[in-house]
Length: 426
Image 1 (cartoon, rainbow, N blue to C red):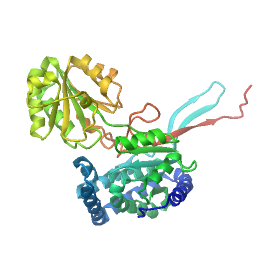
Image 2 (cartoon, rainbow, N blue to C red; image 1 turned 60 degrees about the horizontal axis):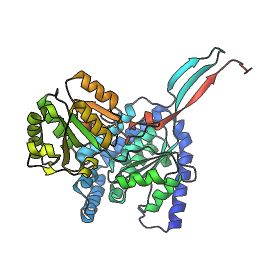
Image 3 (spheres, rainbow, N blue to C red; image 1 turned 120 degrees about the vertical axis):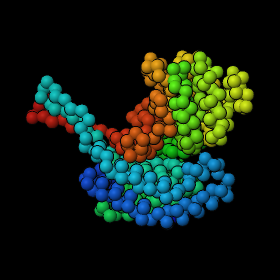
Image 4 (cartoon, rainbow, N blue to C red; image 1 turned 90 degrees about the vertical axis):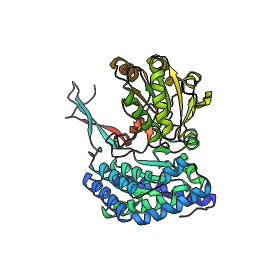
């Protein structure tokens, strides 16, 4: 892995990466479902077979991360173990078993003049994925792009470079075993920021879409500088609202899981809203359970009256994605207050309602405009794998093309096939 390059070297290197990806994209776009399936299964097998090498590479990254002072949340994202490697392999197998989207007829209809029109799924082309910390993205992104018939250029962060390289070696092994171009999934072999800059420029027209997966600074840079389309979310400022009709035991269980299962993921709840009608009885047990799990409570003034052990919240707390064992808590005036608070502060990623009142749930689903909405379930289900997509490249919160988990279908575009029998236009 080359860490230091002259600027000119990086420009030339990335141009070559782009040319190789474009060259590999065409044979990949027309590869049979059977060949792609075989490559994916070979990749999954290679991950398990090379587990020791991957863990050794990850140990180097973990040591470097500790020395660099990475936060506990970032270290958790970086860490691999046998269970996480097995989960990567299982995720690839799940992707392999999905229906191949390429060539699928999305819609078809006949015109009065006899023309038969079909809208058909096609690959996007070359997908660039820029990510930080999570080495498993190397496997997830590569597999999803392959299944959708796209070539992929993966640029991991310097903190995960050893782990990502070991995983990418398994991906290349799977491509080779199935007779597909090894350049179909490339890992950028340098860690300097100039490589990202070249990707944002589009690699001379060889990059069709960019997907950033990382912290706010990375995503902001990509959204501000990219000259190609971007699928992204800026941050996961997720809310969970407990309605007066909720079952208390369910509320306690779901809230604790939504916040504390894994605090460093974008689907972790960051703000808890509780209906004023039940605040006196619901807040103490919910907050006690959170505190017992190691969570710091940052509370509004009226919450502090009920739970004086909390830290007073300030305005910035309602706008903060903690990615840590911290949650902000407010009391709201029913479903109206919850919707208003979410509309004011949400990043439109994921929100949940705990309620038994069907009308409250319907209003929440109809009026809250976020990519993922859940009823009586943890926000930590905001994940493509949990949606049955096998895995995801990320969560998109924009309103164009892809929204929510970006899985295989979201990594396709479409074209029209029009069949006639000699029609001419008058």
